[in-house]
Amino acid sequence: MDRKEIFAKVDHTLLAQTATWEEIRQICDDAVTFATASVCIPPAYVKRAAEYLAGKVKVCTVIGFPNGYHTTAAKEFEAMDAIANGADEIDMVINLGWVKERQFVNIEKEISLLKNVCGDKILKVIIETCLLTEEEKIKMCEIVTSAGADFIKTSTGFSTSGATFADIKLFADHVGKDVKIKAAGGIAGFDDAEEFIRLGADRLGTSRLVTMAKSE
View 1 (cartoon, rainbow, N blue to C red):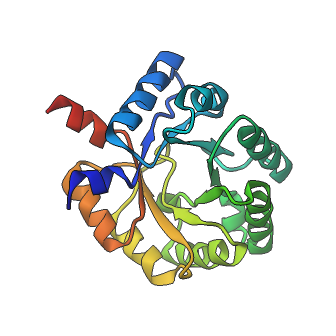
View 2 (tube, rainbow, N blue to C red; view 1 turned 90 degrees about the horizontal axis):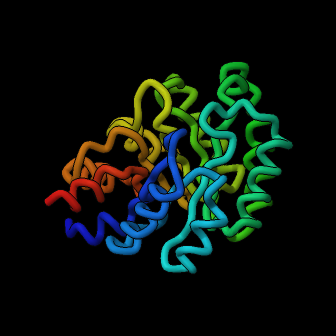
View 3 (spheres, rainbow, N blue to C red; view 1 turned 135 degrees about the vertical axis):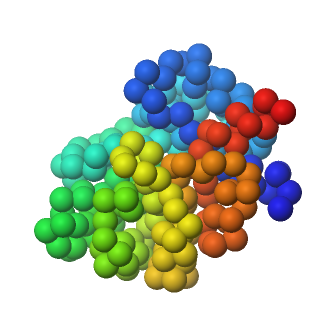
């Protein structure tokens, strides 16, 4: 697969707690250079990045990140604020405690609410696969589909592990036809990226691919 095709599916990501504007500006520059799908950055930098990029690359940010146990009202406000600041895409974390308690109605309502806030902007739902059973992952595929989200996403990158080939295959087997898949966390290189795409991923959350390309 051509590298341009791979970069077109990359959410070039910097979500480190210590991220500075200079670092964010650099990934914005790199995203333009390599024509990535978006930059995925902390909410505090969305407005500045959106103004800096001026539409050259989409701006993605995270909501309820990384643990997902914020109240629904807090997530709603975060999403509204991010969009007002210029975010084009929202990656939200579900309440994993609710999954364990089988509060599936509440999870679906929360996702639906945030999709309503997003409107025609993209909503990706992070389910943190490394903390779920296979049964729970399948159930989340069903809920993300019925709630009307645009993507299901594997991982925050802040838990015990990231995306796996098995999880992408499971997603592809169980999400609805209108739901796309994002693999995030632990993508080792271009061979990994190509395999994730082959298995069904439409987006890749990573900074490693750009870093590798720049070092060549």
